[in-house]
Image 1: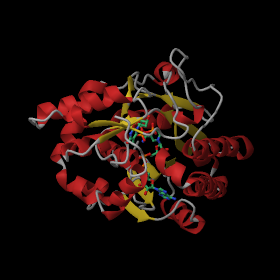
Image 2: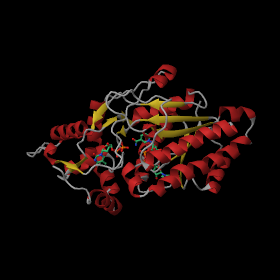
Image 3: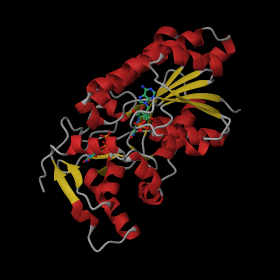
Image 4: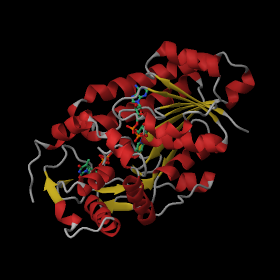
Length: 357
Ligand code: NAD
Ligand code: TYD
């Protein structure tokens, strides 16, 4: 049965992938997005003339607007992707993260709960509020530690992860206190098309193509567990459909890699796709580490595999190769996101880092 979904943050990297998949399934989608530096209308360009996709520019913290959208479109579910999402930015400007991730989510929850409380009983029971979160709320692992499960205690280390942890707690509290039928997903690092090039994979890829240094923080031995964005969004759809109310589900790719391995793999793919007499890997440059840099993330996703039958479709090797090809084939998208604001960010984040080698 097609549903009506209110998707916040739907112009961002992961939200736009979810919106495109939802439209393919036939769901009607209302996208609410503030269009911050990370929100990009180009991500949803294919939906421009689609009568079953409604785009609204606005803030999840705007109670009046959210209330109006709920009354106007009566969604079957609200999916909250909207967030400030980049750890390095959270180190330089923590309050923006508290504003959107904590206060914005709190306002969204309050308005949704007030609207939901007045629904007829059957609609009340079937409604879902799904909150998209991260594995970073669990803190950092050391080599050999068991992967994060849904019951791993929260121990966030960056302003980003602390603000996401705060939002997760609020979502859970609205379930316990008011009975709002919520679901939470905690996913590992995503990669794929349309990721804003402040994050590791697109940043390294685009720097390499321009012959610029590839700034690896510290020794490059930090580990992330990578998942293709389409697999993440398929998991979210499954949790929305079949997840148990009040539960959280970990989502991960069984693809732990050191940052240096990831950067070297990107360089190797580029060497095949855009051969150059110069080795892209020679551009690797070790720079001052990120403060409070979490050493390792790893997700135990046996709950979603066991209960909902989810499995990732992409392997990291082919998923990354496809991603490299996507960026090579989408030069216009790349040029549009590399605005003056993006260049200012590169200067702000990288100019003060010392090169170690
Ligand atoms: P992104 O930064 O690419 O997109 C975030 C979107 O939210 C943007 O379109 C932005 O304009 C919008 N937004 C920001 N503040 C808003 C506000 N106040 N009101 C309305 N819209 C607002 O982020 P992403 O990588 O797509 O991440 C989406 C969600 O998934 C986030 O909640 C993030 O914490 C979570 N997550 C991300 C990853 C990852 O690897 N990128 C992994 C796990 C979970
Ligand atoms: P990032 O993509 O910012 O995601 P997160 O911090 O949420 O995991 O970074 C992924 C890893 O790559 C992280 O360990 C930090 C590292 N990194 C670099 O080494 N250099 C960079 O320029 C960036 C952006 C990240």
